[in-house]
Amino acid sequence: MADVIVVGVDGSEHSEWAIEEAARTGRTLRLVHAWHWTADAMSIPAREHHGHGARHRGRELLDRCAAHAGRRVTTTTHLVEGSAADALIHAADGAAMLVVGSHGWGFLRRTLLGSVSEECVARASCPVVIIPGPERVAPSHRPTHATGPSRAQPA
Image (cartoon, rainbow, N blue to C red):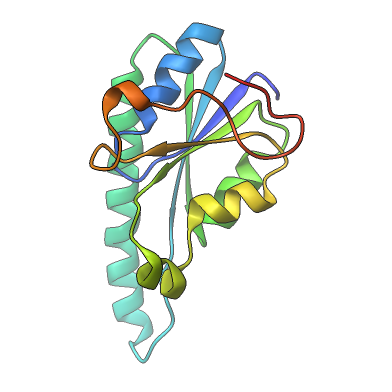
């Protein structure tokens, strides 16, 4: 499975880097979108209704990303209910790399909600490439290396 690049798909632009990397290296893209319903006082019918909407939006994001990759690379899509970090870490087991975006939400929001990219770096068994959002970094400063386990090497 080391010929696979796993990409967290959330609608941001970081998947473009992964598509180009897969095309350059001849690797397959595994596109993963996770959605999570937080437990609260809502009834089960409301959860099922809203959960269906979340699944539908996730499927649209995956299909759009796969269509964007087009014929340049082979893609598979995986829609997972659960924690984004857990889904990505599981999907990336044995992969060549995991590519995620960084929204740069700041200390308070990251403290309350956690950081998917930070959790992936800490727990993934493969190198993790973090692509900053376009509002955070000029295009000329895109990533030049992967972070993660000690076997990560410059890209």
